[in-house]
Length: 288
Ligand SMILES: CC(C)(COP(=O)(O)OP(=O)(O)OC[C@H]1O[C@@H](n2cnc3c(N)ncnc32)[C@H](O)[C@@H]1OP(=O)(O)O)[C@@H](O)C(=O)NCCC(=O)NCCS
Image (cartoon, rainbow, N blue to C red; front, side, top):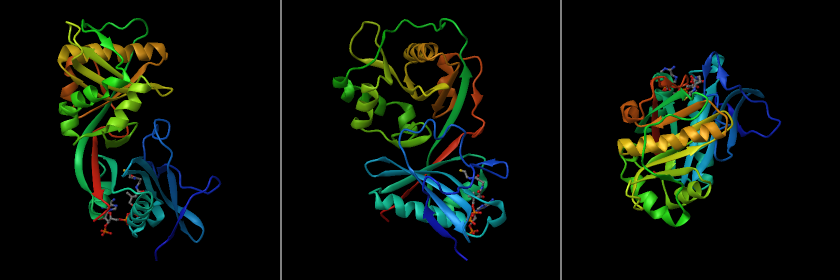
């Protein structure tokens, strides 16, 4: 019998993020979130047996995460029902596309997504390294600057031609949520000083690398870092400085593939424990 699915209020009982030892979402998903969202709760005779979180992440884009169903009632269609209700909610707010990411080894969730009509659109690795205290030792000589608002079109043009954005089908992760890159998004990051450029050594205005990052409490989180090898080293120097300034030791990087980070010469990249084999990003057109 289908369960009732309701919007959760502040006081609603909810199923915890960890279900029978499986984490439905990474530990930091809310802390790194850029926007609020809605929790849907599945109720069976008034008892919370499932949940999902939906956020609107762009003018017509939605993101769902943290889907979970109590082990006692798994395999009865509740996961599928939660996804359908999340889609209805997203449509209500004008979304034409829904996306989510799934750890590459999580065959149950991948299969649920496939059955619900989702198709793979990108893959991503999430890796982290520890920053040693003290000044950063990164060999670079390219000047690094925070771009100005009027440079938005140039920064966007540069980003759109990076291998990372090509591999991600022009999607960029902010926190754990991917969304389409747009002038508004880039302008916002520039305004918040969350973008840095490595310029050509002759100090022309032309970028040779770019990094987009966030500085939540415990880490510096890099959404995208791409460009020439010396340029990448230069903007990574800026990331390390951000870590020093914020007195954090943890740098987390989202990348389209681990090899792409080789120019940074980091001794050890540890895979993020939630997705040690990387992430699969899937999407569905809600208009169809
Ligand atoms: C993933 C999860 C939400 C699925 O919930 P559920 O209520 O059991 O899913 P449903 O019964 O609606 O299953 C829908 C489809 O998904 C597939 N599926 C679900 N779980 C599966 C599993 N463990 N292995 C293989 N396929 C699975 C089935 O193909 C099913 O389709 P079918 O009924 O036509 O065969 C649930 O297993 C769960 O809470 N896991 C722990 C938390 C988690 O890992 N969340 C995902 C994070 S990305």
